[in-house]
Image 1: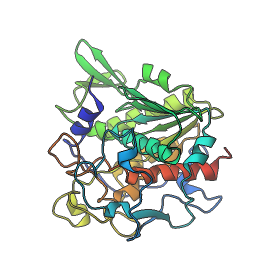
Image 2: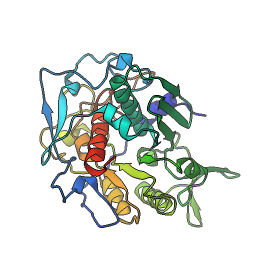
Image 3: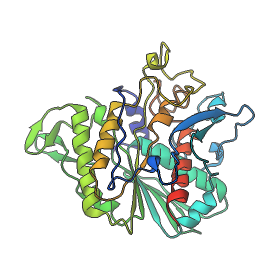
Image 4: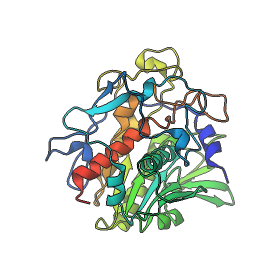
Amino acid sequence: MMGFKQQAILIILVVLFVSTNADIFQNESYVSINGDSTRGCNLFKGKWVYNPYSSKAHYDSSSCPFIDSFECLKFGRQDYEYLKFSWEPASCYLPRFDGVDLLRRWRGKNIMLVGDSLSLDQWTSLVCMLHAEVPNTKTTYVRQYPISYVKFEDYGVTIYLYTSHYLVDIVQESMGRVLKLDFISQQGDVWKGMDMLIFNTWHWYTFTPPVQEWDFVQHGSTITRDMNRLAAFRRGLTTWARWVDQNVDPSKTKVFFLGISPDHYVGREWGSGWNCAGEQQPIGGSIYPTGRPRVAKIVDKVLRTLRKPVYMLDVTTLSQLRKDAHPSIYSQSHNGVDCTHWCVPGLPDTWNHLLYATLVRSFAN
């Protein structure tokens, strides 16, 4: 089986960017945390604020035992500017991240992040943030494919990572590997019973041979060698939404979806002649020059169809602004420029900070 490091290397080989302005959708069945109108707070709309005297991250990467990818400082990045920016919501206060409080809220619970290497990015950040606040707590660490986990023994909290590039099935058949956009089978059984699920997908839907993991794609009774990738993503995500409606008990399991994590390979979007390499400043203001990516609109529309509550961590725009926060050339085992993933410590810490703020604002425990 392909290891996590090989997956991280493959991801930077293919670039696809589509963008347009996206609509905002809300109804009673789609609970959007970024539109919490009852309290007048949008955690995901704001700006990045620079503090020239701060380079203190949530954790020291050299002392976190769970990092094996995206550790930019270890691989030669010498500027600390990307660690001196903090996210400031425009309409409300962002509480300080409190890892001890989060572990207490999660006491005895199983948390699972499901998705591609962007989920690995977020998972690595989360377990390092928690470990930094309880460094003497006994932990159990298992790193495997497709399931890894860190268990904080004193709290009975297990943070799982389940690698699923498409969220739907790939099946080996006589004709070859078939991406089945209408099916979630055995992997869905693993997701059941979790107290919290945080899903993410998209980037692997853009990949073409030799990187893509399938030879044929099936939707309904139709099997073809290829199809429009946005249409494929919409179909696969719709299947995932159906799985949530059929299998999740909201009284037992909270479901989150991480908004589309952008890449920064096309420098002309922000007036550069190249890509993310060498960037040391975010884009100013609150809006990315080309607007939200088109794929984010698909996520909005699919989440709108759900009958069960799914909480949107809408990190898309705030991540678009962070062209400076990628590994770029400071990555392990390859000579390319990685403008897809994010340095840790770095931007994924903000994603998890916003997850914590969401839990504090929206749930009693």
